[in-house]
Image 1 (cartoon, rainbow, N blue to C red):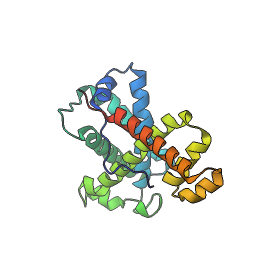
Image 2 (cartoon, rainbow, N blue to C red; image 1 turned 90 degrees about the vertical axis):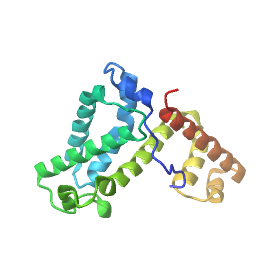
Image 3 (cartoon, helix red, strand yellow; image 1 turned 30 degrees about the vertical axis):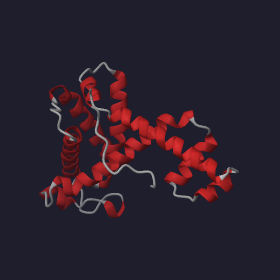
Image 4 (cartoon, rainbow, N blue to C red; image 1 turned 60 degrees about the vertical axis):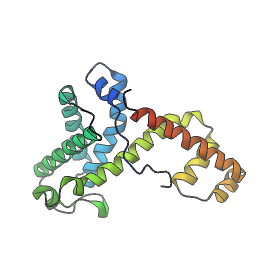
Length: 207
């Protein structure tokens, strides 16, 4: 994916504070939109089938709901993401144990081997951390893109998506959409800028 974020965006402190209010539906909606798909994909990569991965999602989200009131950020960069990653990893291991999974189950060659998770053959950051952070970047990008898509015309969105996400050349997309290469370039730049703005708003620290 040509459009990428080299570092995982940090969950802004204000959202973590608002999550402590269980009646703040907007805050919890934002949390679920970003983190439910992330937790699900990580559980699948670690070897769980669909229903079991969804069980992990429910358990992790329930853990967050119960524990967020005691969570202390203390200005540490990435501490919420690290905590959520560890909770997800632990719940995935528990689910694998309950289901008596065998090594190598999962979605393709990226599946984490069961013995690595069970016996902690490698530190969590090496086994699961990189995958979690990569999926987090991907999910924040998808979430931001979904938020802004209605603001752009379908043809401009296609110009952006096909060149920046699907990796097609500007020339071929311009020809297919009956646009000039410069029009494709402008559409790309505007949409990328807006995505970055939304991501920045999501991750902006408290003043």
